[in-house]
Image 1 (cartoon, rainbow, N blue to C red):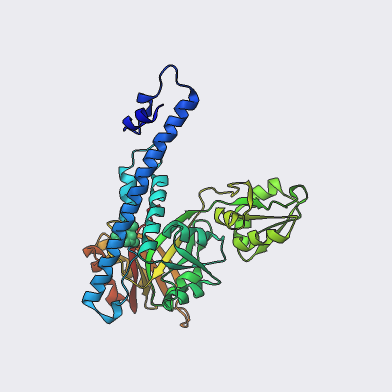
Image 2: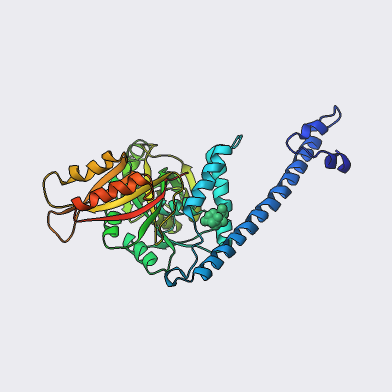
Length: 393
Ligand SMILES: C=C(O[C@@H]1C=C(C(=O)O)C=C[C@H]1O)C(=O)O
């Protein structure tokens, strides 16, 4: 196709209109399609930078607003707005017409927003490490790859890092669909003033990983975290019944070990494979493909309603029979639906308990705040851990 006719073809989605003459070869048609892709890319490119410039303007408004109100506690503008990001992602999925799937399209926008937010102010995010764990994957899924994600050794360290302000937000696992709750995370809230500002759900898919130098025919060890080994037990029994399984502190550590070993494999997720440049010999080897882990994002700020939110509270009950039933009555009276409840010992008091309750709705919703107000006189203490957008992706 001549340069002139390609310029005349302004409809990028229908290049065939100007191309399939009887004499056109496949190669010419391919060239024309690529030419159209280049033209679309140029438009997308300009539009992404236009979007980024708007985000920069938003950042300026946020800074000016803080300077105007000048309240000591609010000296630092809050750039990351999870409720707005959830709304943007929901809108992407709602208006999507394909052929790209809703979730894949939302992931593209997730990355564009991540870069825009980074331009406003780089975000330092602490997560339960090491690199290559599922918590690392959850942090990247929630904040996008432009975020500066920093591994911490323990859940307590994640809380401390955010409390100290060294990291703006933290990511910790809270619950796995087959293993139950992560007690360290729930207990973390009992000795911290941090809030829950978001949640992430991650389907747990395990890979059988090897390095380039691995002697696959003479494997003697398979490394992974004990939970991941358990999640793949049946698959391992069938495929590698005679290879020793070695539990290590994390999937990231399992992947890291392959660097210096020739006869070992690791079981870990996609992020570990990418971080340590490993080859996925087998994918999705977990026995239960619907296994999902839920993670919480912790931070300092209260989050405005997104339209589809959850509220988490922790309740310290009186040590008496029927205490829990009394606590739940106001929720049902005000039509608030509870999505989960967990019990933990209230240390150091022996035989006293706290309840972690998640419910649908935002603390600014009349029924949610009324229900919590009605719980207050029935218990020793109620603390709202946060209202935050439900996981979109
Ligand atoms: C642009 C904003 O700042 C951040 C970037 C967003 C975006 O790129 O769309 C959305 C929310 C914020 O995390 C905003 O607050 O609107």
